[in-house]
Image (cartoon, rainbow, N blue to C red; front, side, top):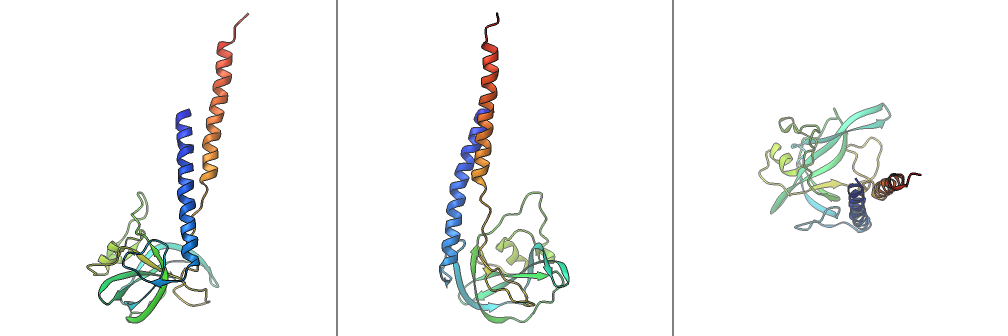
Length: 213
């Protein structure tokens, strides 16, 4: 048990280093201006890309309840492909929409500014994707593109960034995401348990070795 708790504490220290570097990368990406979309962008890079937004090809991702003037509303994130001349289409997460919100069906020229998001794998025991209904719970561009009838798509998603505007849908992301960083507390917990085990063993050993009169 001592080896296990110490090992878990060391693992959390390693996770702390990784998460700190990730958050620093996100901060740098958010502070930097958007750049033209490169051929192989890194996650969390702010980019700008122009193409034909296929509003006629739409899918929904995730599920989220937001508070509106009408009260809590269940919705999801609207996905549309952005076709680019001479390059694979990019799946664009345009932002949150209510579940029954009407969506435009006319392709339009558009320039989208946002950040790159790496593909996700389905979560075991999580909600199951429904490609036939174009309803997804893992942000996997290849699977989403296939459901939209696209043979190839870029291997990442572009999450649109924008500003809050009342009544405007979809509601784009306002900033880059920042995952929680609690690994230092977790490490202290595991090392504290290791210390407690040592203390308990010390008491046990002292009593066991005590010479009886």
